[in-house]
Image 1 (cartoon, one colour):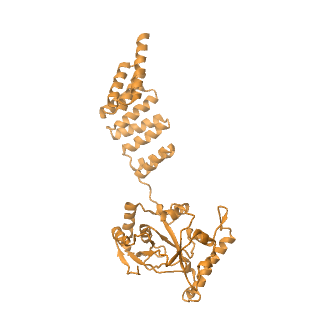
Image 2: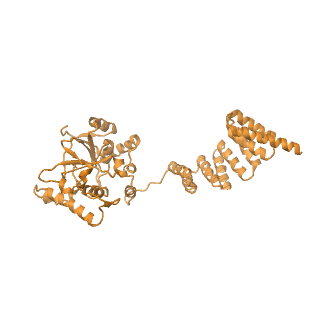
Image 3: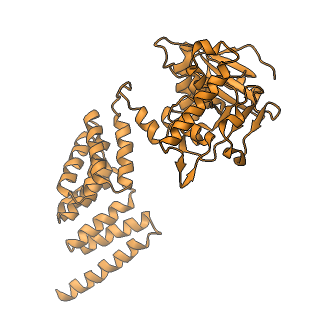
Length: 401
């Protein structure tokens, strides 16, 4: 496909229609935040401007910048990993990962990932800019694939100013960022032309990024899942947005599953601070406190949940269970009564009320509750077993008296 005029993209659907022309699996994509940028290696921007305009000096200086970078990295011992020495390309890939300017140019197999980068703010200017997505056909006649055996070659082997050749390379050390961004690296000359391109309107960038997250789950956190990405997203330029009540609840639920109960309570505290009239938050915090055997504190939370929502059947049920732990069986039965009034089809409440009544030697009433629990849940063998235990206790009690 020859080079085409750049199209203007204003929606995700427009972009997907554009990208569908290159869906045969042999195209890769690159997104840049400024439509004035071309496909160019970042190291070339370190070449003095006077040399850039010289055919005799531009490319040799470009090669020298990369070889000097490799040499200095080796002198500092950065060429060792997992007990082996890295090749020149592997060193450059690592340096590129940490934002050094190299001869490598990042592409992605995912058109939507490239679109996300095209919708980013250009860090080199405070003004809003159009973005651009390039499409390049990865054909063998134009790009040579780097095989693992070639990684032992020094960089000048690949960068030949007299006969520039283009290459593409998939690093064998697949870190989290390469996997998340579906990356592939191109190099060989400091720049080359795309086969097609589209321009992303600057006024539509934010809308498209939001739609990418909603439709495809593509986010900055997801594209930079490593420690460096985690840190860079939280530098002094990043504004802080407090978590919502729902986000704190999700964190609390995750902590509860991991038995990190103090962390769960801390997140429920913050969610309640943001939504102090949400009865379910007090109920959920009460469940965690009960799990920690903080029974009195759990009851306080259930009390508040019931005050905010007097029809909260589950809160009555759990408050009854907690009162049983404190030996308050009569008070527990009162809570079970209310839970049953609000939700008469919950077999577990009849079962628990039966147990509380059995503790008070109200055997007939306990058996009646077990009968109702069995009617509602006839396959629960635990209830049958408990009923038989109470019947035996009843017979023994009647014999003794």
